[in-house]
Every structure is written in C-alpha cells, then in structure tokens.
Image (cartoon, rainbow, N blue to C red; front, side, top):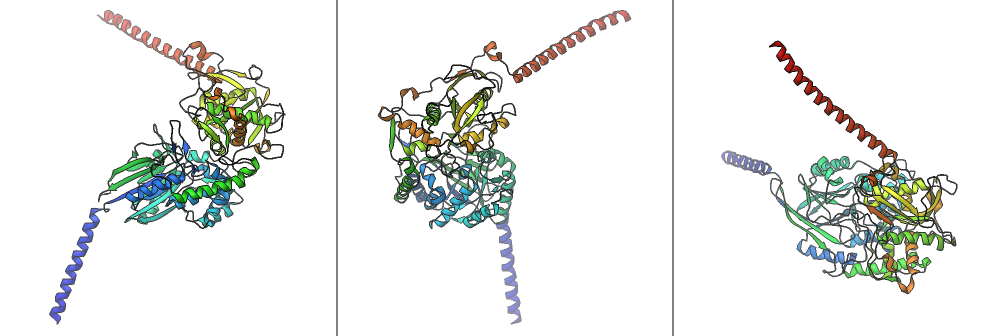
Length: 637
C-alpha cells in the first residue's frame, strides 16, 4: 500500500508540474487572438426624419438607421453598437426631450450598448439634460448605457447634489465593462475641450480629457478589458491635427476612438500609434462599421471598415417608424399648436436648393442671407413694432444646421435649419434678441467674419441691412476695407449706436470674440442708452401676446409670407452683400491700416533696415580685412 501511495504521489506531482509548465507557456504567448466589430454613429442630432440632399435622394432617419443596424448584425451578431455624442438637437422631436426623451428611447430600441454626451445634450442647460435622463429612465423602455468620464456638475452650482442624484439614478458611469462574443470590452466617454466651449450654459465642469482617459484605461486594464473603446466628443480632422489625435499621443492603451463633434467623415480610419480613430459624418447620413483583429502578441489588423449610407436601401424598421409618428403627433399638440402649425404643414415652396454654408467659400451663403433677412423682418412684423425695422440683423454659420430642399418647405424642415438653443421660457429654440452696437463694433463683427471665420468656420456671419468688403490677403484683424448701411448708404459711424437683432444663442457667443481675437476686438451688446447689457435674456423679442419670438419661427413666418409665389429667385445665390477681394495690389493691402497693421509694418521696416545695416557692416568688414591684410603683408616684406 505504501508503494502505491508513493507512486500516486509521484504521478500527482508530475501532473502538477506539467500543468504549471503549460500555464507558463500560455502566459509567455501573451494575449489570446481575437476579433471585434464595432458599429458606430455620432452627431445624430435628433435625425428622426430623412433629409433631402442637393443631388437628389434622402439620407438619414432613425427608422432607416434601425433597419441598417439590423442588417449589419445579421453578419456580425456579436457587434458592439455605440454613439459618440450629440444625439440631441436637430428636429422638432427634440422639443419632447425633457418629457419623453425620444432620442435616448430610440437609441435604446435600436440596441445601442453605450453612448456619451456631446455639447448639444446641454442646450437646455444642466437641468434640461437631467430632465431628459429622468424621462428616459421613467419611460419603461430599454435605454443605452451613458458613459461620461470627465464631465460633472460644477462645484459652484447650488443644485449640484440634485444633478448628481439624477445622473446616478440613470446609471451614468465613467466607464463600463461588457462581454460580447468572448471579448471583454472596456468603454468610456469623454467631452472634448472645444465641445465644452460650445456649451456655455451647461453648468458642468470639464476635467482635462487626457487625464480622465488615462485613469479609465488603467482601471479597465486592471479589470481585464481586452479591447478598450473611447467614445469621444472631441473631434477629428481630414487634414491637420485634432483633439482626438492629441489624446492618443498623450494616452496609451486605447484601441479605438469613435470621434464626434467635428462632423468629420473619414473614408479610412486615422491610425495614431496603435489606436484607430473613426468618424462617420453627421445627421445619420452613415452608419460606421469597423472590424479589428489581433494576434497572440496583441498586434491589431484592420479587417474591415465601411461607411454604410443610411439611404433606405435596408428599408425602415416598423417599430421605430411607429414611434416617430407617435412623437410627431405629440409635437403638433404640445409645441406647435400655439403657432397654429403642424410638423408636415407646407409653408411655401422653393424652386431651388438652399445649401448650408461651405467653410471654403467666404463670398456668402443664400441660406444665411435669407435667415438674416427673416430676423430683420420678424423684429418689425412679429414684435408689433410697426415700421421700426432694425438697422442690422445677423446670424452665424454655426447655428444653421440643415439646408432647405427644393420643393415644398414644411414646418419640420424649417425648424431643422435653426434648431439649437432654448429660451428663458425653457422651451426649445433660441429666441431673437435686440441690442445696440456702435459703428466700430459693427465693423468689428464684420472683421470676425473676414479674419476669424477662416480659422473658425462656424463664425462666418451673414448680415441683413449692411454690405461690406474685405481683402483676404490683408493683415489679420484688418481685412475689412469698406462697410455701408443699406438703409442710408452711409458708413457706420464709430461712436453712434445702431439697433441689431440676432438670436440669443449668437448673442451669448459674442463674449468669445475678445478671446478669439487675442483681445484686439471687442463687441459688447448695449441698451438704448449705450449701457452694457448684463443679461441678454432681458432683451428677448416677444409678440403682442408676450411669447418669445423663436429664430426658427421668424424664418418660418418670413417664408410663409411669400405665399404661393414661393421663395424669390433672388435667394437662389448670394446677392453680393460681401465683396471679397484676393488682390495683391499694394495700395489695397495697406490702405486704411489699423494700429496693429501700422505696428507690424513698422516692425517689418525696422527688421529690413536692421538686415540691410547688418549686411552692409559685414561687407565693410570683409573689405577692410582684405585691404588691411594686403597692406600689412607688403609692409613686412
């Protein structure tokens, strides 16, 4: 017996030794091989309805997106589905955000695993964002996980604890772990710095993105994540560097970044180090799909990357289509009834397509000019001010969110053009405000368009009631060469006050002008007496019944005034309000110089003079050395 026991002991030890050796060998091989497919979107902007395209056809619509997702999942049943933020703000359905949370409910119905928040989730402030979360949670339906690692209620916000309770009740986390198809995913969400700047009323504080990302990556790796996905509302670029590229350079360990905010469409992923960065474009035009595989050493290979147009090829999901119709009926009752309108009501018609601004074109945009004219018209016609027309009205490219199609123009389509922001009444849509600017400030606003817009395309401005010219080759912040008021034909006088109408959203962005211009330009809204306005909401324009005049309704009413005649053909193209010169004529480049231009020219002249003096001194020294040496040699001979 004792011999048998000894034999079994030896055998057991041998088995244990083999197991240890096998475990060591497997550990030496490193991570196991695997594959991950991720379906992704970003910047959906409440795109519940398909949108007409300039070249014909339609793109987008949540019912179409749902069908496209189901088709992709047939080939990739273990695919992850995620969104990079700004799923809100873009159609009339958004007006139900605080009460019905249609965007989150739709994403949940479509089977999204995780989403992050973008700046437009905060168009109604921190309270509006949390109301949306509460409505989604109480809907009784499936909602997606929400990950936000670096965006929290500001410490100084008196309602911070209530906001944090709402976030916790929904289940908002910095990151999550999710197992799918044998792969353990780690997913976290980030708000970018530019996006935070674009949400001035969010009431949330931003932690530096790279710092938060590093923390999330470390914790996810500790908890066994094999494939780490960052849902970033930071942004990518087709050319040059971007926030998300800089993020990857600062933080190791991220396998994939789904990048929103900049609305970029990347035909191929950006690869920075060992990280893939993808962007599928905005407004539900594409569904992105990426498949990455990796070997035992953890080396990744791009197996597949596609941008699938959401063009109806896959049909429409009947469940989503029914949900959208139900929400549309609620909008007619709860939001549009006071305006006497419905979602599908035709306001007028257009015989031409009115596109969104092109950042490469500075000469003007017909949609922007139409909108500015609508603001100026509405301030007189809708605000009950009779014939008192504002001197100037203006809007910015950044608030124009959708084109106007050819054909009948409906309420829903017009709202999509001007859908951002909210008013003091808490309802969706930024209202018009009235203020006064000096002639010098009017010219400064034109200079923003001429100088800053090429660096910040959303700052392109469109005026009604003023014409101006600029030369793109002139000195920065001194490009404007002429300005004229349409009513009088005169130049704006520097110290005189002029009445200006714009949207509350644009007006709140005026404070950024000083920062963007390095403190060299300043635009301060004033009242009739020239005193700075502390609160722009006090300047909201209202109709005779006391209701805010929303910017979208100003455009809708202006279009409706055209009746059966339709949009005038004068809006088919820019009408020359901006005269853009690209001449290198020296006189045109330096006439009417600003102090900055004069200073730069003087510095340039001094630099040239110094260079000439230095060259002449060197020549003299060489000559002196040559001839002096010759004489010395002859003397000592």
